[in-house]
Image 1 (cartoon, rainbow, N blue to C red):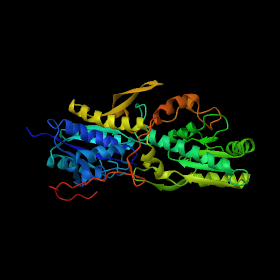
Image 2 (cartoon, one colour; image 1 turned 45 degrees about the vertical axis):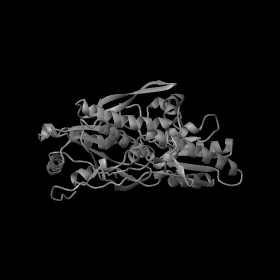
Image 3 (tube, rainbow, N blue to C red; image 1 turned 120 degrees about the vertical axis):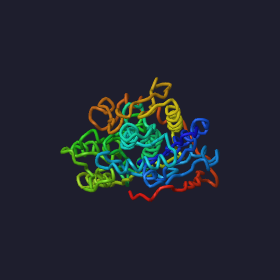
Image 4 (cartoon, helix red, strand yellow; image 1 turned 90 degrees about the vertical axis):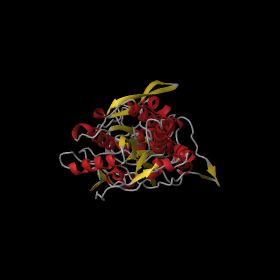
Length: 419
């Protein structure tokens, strides 16, 4: 009997550890070569499946696949592309089946966040709706840490470590110069609806007066008057003020403070820089000299300071996805289940995709201080274990050394398809 092949793809914004999940999938499949044939990767996510642009991962050496564990970015390319409903876009699903049939694909592993879970759920239903047998397993990933059920999301722990480190270091810098120069520093981090990354900035402040002094979360409506009063009080008490702000903070009416009016491929509002907006408020209302920075792609690409816990979990979830498929599972996602905070212990669980797709996990009220401007001890107990351990990549000539795969294409067997 001919073995079924597997399809793996990366979706959405990449992370410092998404390739570790890829390594978990590919290495585990290789260990079960008697049950799974070739692992094909989609070039640029699900688009690779639709356009029959498949990468033959069997041509990559074991050493290069192992090197994915310390390489940032998306080794096979990612995309922001959401499959519409079967009723409105039946041709896309029929195309997927054509490609899967042409390449004998029976396993589908999709590595991404909430929208990717939705795509994976739709693919998992192909056997029922269109009569094609496929087992679809979602491999969780998102720096936003907003997937439900799982204790945390691969990618988040490393971003958390990076922003906490960066804002601590910047705090030392600002404190040095505050007497005669900059009095307010604002760091903008990712987080459209959920403030997990902003909260991670708060880990840098371990004692009263240590930066960051103020955190602005999407879960708390932005109160301009209260914010300016807090900044002023911090400058008067400590000589300076450091602020961590989420890109997705909202005005009292619910609109984004930094909304541009544009939409991305998933229909999400395109956000402009919120840090300069907040900084201008400080300048206009308080007159303090300021500086601001946007962590942007740096925060999710920072593999040089990744969390070991994050790397371990990313790999384990990729490995478990393959094991679930071999056990006959479909329409599920492996999850991280926390057993204890200190020492941090965890194991891999399983969630139904119908309970994951299109559901966002927000910061709980008990994680945000009473005044809305910082994190609580309960939040610290949750966050702290996720940034533990240093998983440094190998260095050469003073720089981190990462792998670039060959990514050789599989010969197409079907007519072209326009996405």
